[in-house]
Length: 141
Ligand SMILES: [Mn+2]
Image (tube, rainbow, N blue to C red; front, side):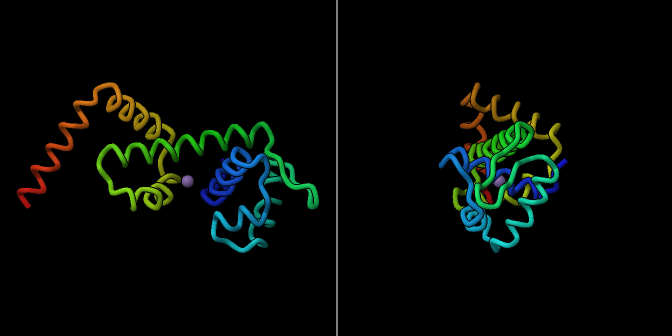
C-alpha cells in the first residue's frame, strides 16, 4: 500500500502522463509545490516499489500496477470533488478540501460515497431538496 505522500506522486504522475504523454521531474515538482530533489528521491522509491520505471535521462513510465493505482487515485479525487460540489461546498474550497481528506478514507467509505453520488445523480430532486433544506437552515441562523 502506498503512503499518502506516495499517493500524491502517483496521482500527479498519472495525470501528467494522461495530459501530456510524459511526466517530467520539473512538472511533478511544480504541480506538488516541492523541490525537484524531493521528486527525484520519491521517484526512486516508487521505482523500488515497482509503481514506475525511472531512467535518469529517459524519464519515467508507470508499471501496470502504477497505472492501476494511479487510475484509482484520480477516480477517488474526482469522486470526492463531485460529492463536495453536490452538497454545496463553495468552489474555492473544493480542491484543497479533497487534497486534505482523500488519503484518509477507506476504500469501503469511497465505495459508499460512490453510491451516494450515484443516488444524487439518479434522483436529482434529492439534490434540490437538500438545497432547500440548507437554505432554510441559513435563513434561521
Ligand atoms: Mn488529489
